[in-house]
Image (cartoon, rainbow, N blue to C red; front, side, top):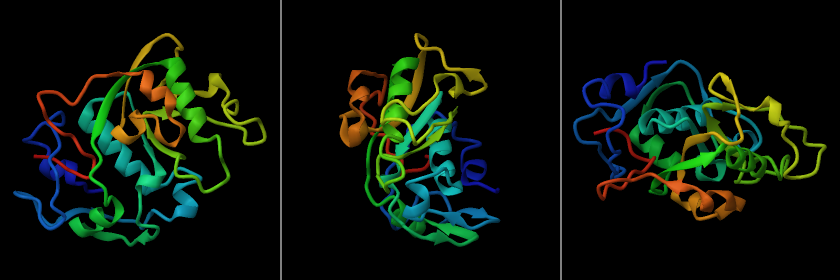
Length: 209
């Protein structure tokens, strides 16, 4: 995949604050944000029940830009409900996908808290719930036949290539809406917010300065 990250971030630095898009232009960068070789799936029936390539792209960018261990984004944020066809992906496609200018927050959480957030994500599966999260930096398996909030086998959870450690501190990036406990993510309210800093507003419907 030839990405906007490759073309626009080389001289900018991945940790730079994200800027807000007007929805019509992005100063200094092309209207064609990325070029992809495959269709991207943002249909609600897919993105609210499973990992998708489009969901992966969005949360991978979040984690990369914020230097987080984990990124979590509720799938209800992704609004296109469509297959985005392969080829050039333009600013308007991004705006259709991400119409709300939600701010991001970098949280410091324990492994136990990360696990609780993942449990909430899959608690209503297989219903098409917006709380179902697209994730980056973490892998896990769950059994939908088990009771809600007790579906994940803790030993299956890995952060990067390492098993989850309950007492270890991790950096997790998510949207401010979820940090306030919305969509059942009460555990995020107990996390320590490490950003944004210096008065910057980081939004994920933003790219890079």
